[in-house]
Amino acid sequence: MTNDNVQMWEKLDIDMKPHAMLMTALGPMYQEIYLAQENRPEGMGFYDMVVGDIHGIRVRELHEHSKTGGKVVATYCVFVPEEIVWAAGGIPVGLCAGTQFSIPIAESVLPRNTCALIKSSFGFKLGRICPYVQVSDLIVGETTCDGKKKMFEILGLHHQVYVMEVPNKKTPASRQLWLDEVNDFKDVIEDLTGNKVTAENLKEAIDNVNRRRQALKRLYHLRKVRPVPISGKDALLVTQVSFYDDVKRNTEMINKLCDELDQRVKAGGGVAPADAKRILVSGSPIAIPNWKLHHIIESAGAVVVGEESCTGTRFFSDLVESSGDGLDAQIKAIADRYMNIHCACFTPNEERLDDIVRMAKEYQVDGVVHYHLQFCHTYATEAVQVEKRLEEEGIPLLRIETDYGDEDTGQIKNRVDAFLEMI
Ligand code: BJ8
Image 1 (tube, protein in one colour):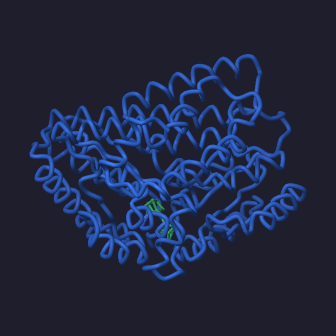
Image 2 (spheres, rainbow, N blue to C red):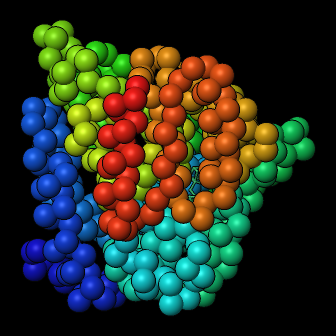
């Protein structure tokens, strides 16, 4: 903890005591889950450094940006079009919301039977523990689920909040509604930053974000190889960090890592034996530092080779078509791309089932672990359809409902062990 960091956190009105407790807990946890892994790619050194100073380096960049009048826009969902923020000279940051630490604070206000992700994010703001929240000028929420929607109303009492309406169907009328929402979002961001979104700056932003998506696609493509050259935990971390790192640096670091993995694959090297059980994780997003499920699966000798989630393929599989045919066409291309995200908030959501089956085959998995947070009704209920579809396809499935606590770790371990034995 450097003095510079401490001064910056004080300026950001961080509550220093609980914040210090959070930072102290993170180190040993990262050591146990990440640094104890064997045969890690050297390229993960960058991510170790990022996590080692998780509330330092990047927050400082955002803080410097703020000091020169730049705006920071925080988000909780992959539906918020980051290209528009970049184009207007702002910096988008995907907030973490993956720790148990902030949940008791949130439960002093929110109902306890609310999903961990909502409580964790709300607790960060209420407790003034997260510098990414504190440095942001605006939090952009969305109407993807009832818990979030109502939480954003209360969050609005503590921070500047703007909510985008995400429709629940993918009909032509819904698509028009979403296009209008994206246009309104552009106006909000222009007002916030004082900068106009133009065809030129938007094209540059689209290209930059697309390049990061392509780099992540490259990383995931490498995970299809047997033996797999990178652990699921490490690949998950790369995606998690992509939510808040600078888009150009992030793309460069992912590609560098992939260059190394290419060499590994050529040499036939891997992080797990070629016959290790291969698992696809599907379901709710897994926000940093929630590494619980991957750690359990990989500690049991299997390897996670893909994530069908918003901290996985839903984040990057589709690109925005960068035709450059003027601002209206670009905004339409952005709206179309985001409507392709197969979140469980949509009905029907057959495309997600298709994606899970396609990924299970492409990544040659032995089984799928469907993961959802307790009190997340959309993913819990959609799991019924996932189970039915995978049964028809002959793909083994394990359903896990959990939260960010440790109480059920032993029970999940037993269920994962039994599942791996069975497949
Ligand atoms: S596009 S998955 S990031 S909404 S887990 S808060 S749904 S009760 S996170 Fe998500 Fe966007 Fe969809 Fe992706 Fe509600 Fe469920 Fe909690 Fe959730």
